[in-house]
Structure formats: C-alpha cells, structure tokens
Image (cartoon, rainbow, N blue to C red):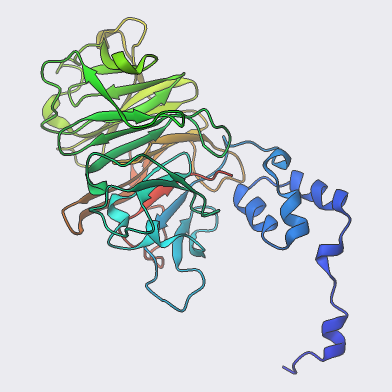
Length: 379
C-alpha cells in the first residue's frame, strides 16, 4: 500500500475542534466506563467532556477487569495487562508497576477500583510504606506507616471510593496476628479494633469483610458475623450480631472458602464447597434481623445480578445488562493462594446458579497469567 501523501495527512479531520456541546453529548451517551475513560484520553478537549458528572449510566452495570502482571517488556508503553470480559481478550493498559510487578502483585489488594500497595519509592513487599493507588489515573493517597509489612495485609475494604468523596474509611486485616484496623483521612494513624470473642483467631477457612449499609461486617469461618462499631475510635470494637452456623445447615468440613458480599440491597454469605463432584457454591442471606442462621434464607436465584468473588480483595456484585458481556444469576470466581514468594494455586471460572455447572470465562486461546485481581472501574 502506498504511504499517505502529506496532502492526505493534512486533510484529516482535527477531532479536537469538534463543538464542545457535541462532545459532551457524545460522552453522556456512553454505557461503558472503559469506553468513557478511553474517550477522554483522545485529547484535552475530549478529556474535559469526560468528567464524572457527564457519565450518566452509573456504576451498577460496569463489568470489572481481571488485572494481571505486567508483560516485563521494558519497551512497551502499556505494560499492564487486563482480561476484558466484554471483549473476551487481554488488553494492555498504562497501569503503574507498583500494581503489576509480578513480585508485588500477589500482595496487592483491590476495593472499589482502588488498590492498596507499596509506595513507588519502596518497591518491595516488605515495605511498611503503603498507598492507595488509582490504577488508571496513577493518583496516589499516602496512608500512615503500617505496623506490619505490606505483604501481611490480608484483606482491604473501602467504605466508598476516594474518587467520589473525601469521607471514606479504609479497613484492613493482617494475616499474621489477625488484627483489624481502620483509617480515615482525618486520622493521624491506624486504629485497631478489639473483639468480644474469646477465640478471635481463625484456624481454617479464614474470614471475610464487607461494607454494608454504613457499617463494616466480618464473618468468621464458622459463620459468626460481627459488626464493627467504629464511631468512637477509642472504643472501636467488633460485636457479635449473628451466631455460629449449625452443621446441619452447612457442614463445617465441607467448606473450602467463604465470602461476604452485598448484592441487590442484601448482605450475602457465599460458601465455596469441597468434596463435591463439581465446584459447588451455596448462598445465604445473612439474618441480621434475628441473629440466628436457622432463620436465614438460602438464595437459589440471583436474578439479573452476578457475583464477583475474590479471596483477598473486596467481593462485589453487578447488575447484568444486555451490553455487559457477563451472565446473570452466576458467580464469577478468581482465586489464587499465595506463598511467601509465588502463587501456589489458581482457580477461576463461572458457576451457574441454575444448573450448578462451572465453565471457564476465558476462551482457550486466551492465556490468563497469575496472579490476577478483579478491579472495578472508577473515576
């Protein structure tokens, strides 16, 4: 093919000169936040139109990305890799190496589109200098020095996105001493949370944390649910609100992992089962009103919603739409276990609540690299 002449190049349209009201109108008609953010990256004029106030479709339908380690190609301007459920392929994005470096990513945690990670000045999992990091804007929020090394942070949950408000809370737990702590922008340091339980330590399937209707909830491996009372930092405590789940409801020996997740206005407890011929899940609505699991409702149909479960990151749900690219009434799981140095177990797929079958959500031609992290879109 003949190269373009200088005349043909000069006759190309200058998209930055489109009328501003037309550009804003186009941005307001976009359904996908990924397209919206890409639209804003075209030029400065379009960037001003791609302000969060112009994204009118909301967050409930936005399909997350499965973020993977970088390509280790120092010459690539976009070393970060993400599996895109809508497009069914791996895309490259300009994501900070503090997230995508293979030696750091097993310990990176994600919540509401933000990551908690080591400072870019101390690229090591042994660092106590930690930040909140926006993966697409590269925006950093410095957190107080942590009492443990970065690699000991097991769970990370945000009350709300720092992109949308300055009134948010960061909740973390550690894998070493099973301590829970929180921080707010007005605080000078981390505040530990005490518990009224005698056996606070978890010895098996671990636990999970979720933010639901203005409060943080913790679930223990035996089904006990606690609410974190943190209004007064000097008296911060986790109080029991739901008792232990009886074995005749879900046998303790059959539980491989549990997850706490909000979906459609309800707080759900999801059990990943073992000793089954297939990867089984059972879902219950947490009985916060009575505190007794015998009153709990087992959820057999998620309706038009899909759950996205993660071992160390915030689990979440989305409302499935015609253009979302994912399936309703299904559970998407992406789980990897981490040793001191490398991931030791990988496990991902889609569980259909209707027929109980599991299928991969990536085509055979697509290689998803471990470790991987679900991340939600945010401004």
